[in-house]
Image (cartoon, rainbow, N blue to C red):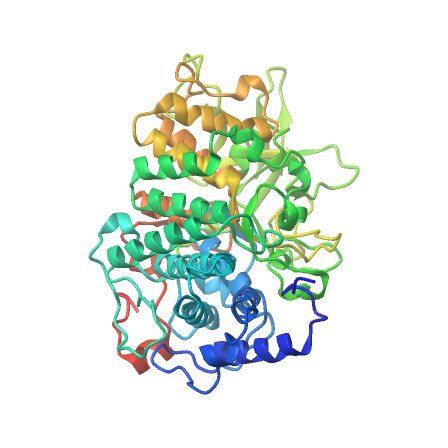
Length: 576
């Protein structure tokens, strides 16, 4: 029977081997010290199962709680990765301050002593070291070794990608900027920060090699495959602005197949079943026994008997979804807490008097009335305020293609973006309507359990769409976007064509909005904004600071952990 890393009832040899792997992973948090007596090829790779044990240990390291600076509970690579990649962007509204270090990421107040910043660095490099033991030991000419070798190259490339995108500037800002240390061998070497370009070049080599060595996954989507390697490689080429290579890589992965055939048809239940879905290329596979409860990724997004439920979708993101209320991504993935029995409609918008670039703003709500033409108004302090229905994307009422609009009101001397919605339940003690996100919940019916997705076909199709749009291939880009929109349940009148951009100025902006909606909360938005040299507009209600974060802001990169730079002497990122 094949050994399964996610099965808790494992044989004695596996437990011994894995304990050695984990002791390597957790014994030190700097790159210049690897204990020589804890793991070596003679010990773990002395039989055909050795490499499998090591690779299974890599996948376990991404989900298991690890101790760092005295912390262990909830201290997982998976949780920190999805929070550090998503929370500094503009898809989320933080409903209150929290003592969890996730707040520093959300507020761009990071420092080099935070456990989330240090844990990701530590675990990432431990996984890289473990993959190097496999790469250095297995003979590629032996057919039975090729899949595991491919997995090792895949994980080494993926970890370097995570590290260079989090701790260094985007590739588009210059190949010569400081990257992260490259580790392509287990040999002791001086630690230096390789240039961003060198790190990306090695990632391309590793993922290309992985795609050549691997075939189908050796299990569920918690194990990588050839298509997973090509999928991540398409992202890397997109980030490098190598658009022709991105398109070619996606075409190679599809191998002539209809893109729609790669998507999950039961989309409403996709994330609860991501581990076994055909759409998932790679995920961090969890079993029932891996339930982290209040410390899970889903806990901050959802409260269903358990969970904190403190992170909600931002108003700008909600506006995108509400254009088509039957959009599955709005209807099924967002659990809106409407007040039972209420027939009232409210205007929700930020309170201008509370706005701060340090602490954010609260949200006001007023019951609205509608006239015969459907125009809304409300009263406050004896004054009647008219809510303006405004066309967006630079178009006006006279333009028949300007089909998208927003509500605005001039209140407190400020033009405020308004959301009109039925009366909603407010989070106790705060002013934010509760809208729970279900993308990290309900695996096996458990509200706190999921197998978070690191790469899926929908992203890969949108990678190609963006590459096409930025290459002037507008019709092809819109065709890919429409595949995603069709699966989401958007009606025919919501599809795009070169002759009808629905008020958008260009196709690239369409693709960016589609990526935002499709991949929301999955850790893409921050990278998408900054790599395209755009500013992050966070001027919407929430406990996160009310401000526009320029892409030149030093804190869009995380600091090198204190335990690393003080030992190895590598250069810290500017601003820390």
